[in-house]
Length: 365
Image 1 (cartoon, rainbow, N blue to C red):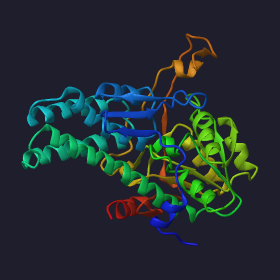
Image 2 (cartoon, rainbow, N blue to C red; image 1 turned 90 degrees about the horizontal axis):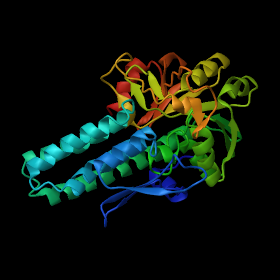
Image 3 (tube, rainbow, N blue to C red; image 1 turned 90 degrees about the vertical axis):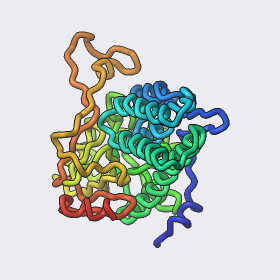
Image 4 (cartoon, one colour; image 1 turned 30 degrees about the horizontal axis):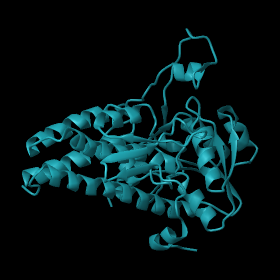
């Protein structure tokens, strides 16, 4: 059964919105994901610095959610500093962009969003379309909301395309958290088809690896799916191979922080392992991401893999689990070569191999 975007909007309603712009106080309220699942606390961001820190500290995480947050962070740089002239406003936005871009270098949505906001501001000022700073702020508020709305519609469309890959009684293996918490909208990328399937009465369940060291699977994916009444089974990261070998998985659906024009996918550490095992066992492996997550200019060696604090591995929520002087390598993303990917699902359509030919055809539609 086929559904239009309008029809599916009426059928599915997000249970939890983790990013809320409060226009009356020029404040961005975000659900602090570092405290989930035990505490549901919203924190208020009022300038670019606090926004960048929230991104760096993973109080907001997931490439699309980071992009939306950064877009509003650009606005907060103006509402907090209140530059007196349009020229000073552009300088302030440029400064804010540098601060925000450095918070999480791998997620392409961040730089995409700040660049979009700055370019729009520069264009309006150069063309004389903004008469003062207040008008510029209102313009940027509209643009940030547009980024949010575009993201949500893209996820709905991705979900509809992803539904084509789900059958009744399927079990989907995922990685990390690629739901509404990661995108800021309440729906998600890799979890969008699952949520829409559930809303349509299709029996579907999820297997979620814990995703060390930040435990986004056990803390966030489990929380989010149970909130929506979707059956989920938590496993250790090291059990991924066994559950696929035992035939407990019908397909794998993961998100992406960056996708290159040749089909290389950068996503949460552990994605590459899932892809290789799925490929070996003949299990479909799907990547779901909006076209804003595509980087058509870089090659695989250009992309910096973010490494984080070694204590994230040495401890769990501050509790030591190994010797404090042990050497630690803590990359938070890995790269999956295109040969292991069955298809990439976007809001513009499903991209099949050969990716080096087909990615640009779909993304540039």
